[in-house]
Length: 337
Image (cartoon, rainbow, N blue to C red):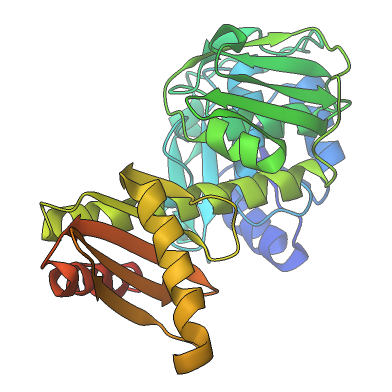
């Protein structure tokens, strides 16, 4: 009997095309259009390999990958991705390969590629207890717990960095501790996702003292990933400014109406506060100013407003305002590429 391949694809046209191609490649395909059915198979029935579409409704390929690795570590797991590029799947736990869509039948894995895989055994119902985010990304772990409607508290670095609370698969609270204090909710989750290789442990569930996440788990993960990307782009802005103007005293970026900047270098907090004040001061005279360079008694200030009311501001010794403004403009141009 041909080896069994579990196919997870919630879009009918993609599932049908993949079922036909995999069958011709020699697999006995069991296709699932729903998350629950596929999860039940991985939990309770044997399989030789998994093929999982990247475009899923109600789950992610990363969550299924973590679950499959947990109960059948040797079973190959292939992701179907439009680009066929493994980089699109994630930087931590890797699938055995990526198949482009539409599938190229001449290059599809055959059952012989899975001949060494052990069949899946029924799982015990426990969640993973510990590991490192360098091997299992925190986002994938959360997605797997959500997928299986599990409850628990993920303690990051023994709880010193932060904790994530889930009840029956739903995110309730996330908190991250850092030098500037503590950040909670989706922003706290984003901060935790930034740590690429730290230990974690899944502890028994207990109710958090407060609930800070009020959106579905998938939506919280998506927004947290967006915030991580935004913070990385902000950090790149500051790095460019500091490299273009080595004697800059401080640089910062953030929202004009924010209480404090999103990221700083050096005396960036002062640069941001003075920059926002300067933009407000010239508005009655010049209107909505986007570029501003000022020379003071001892310091130069440059400010640039961009995007949706973002402000990039920097301080340097007197006489360097135009150099600073040029550095700010160059950084924003690179960000837009």
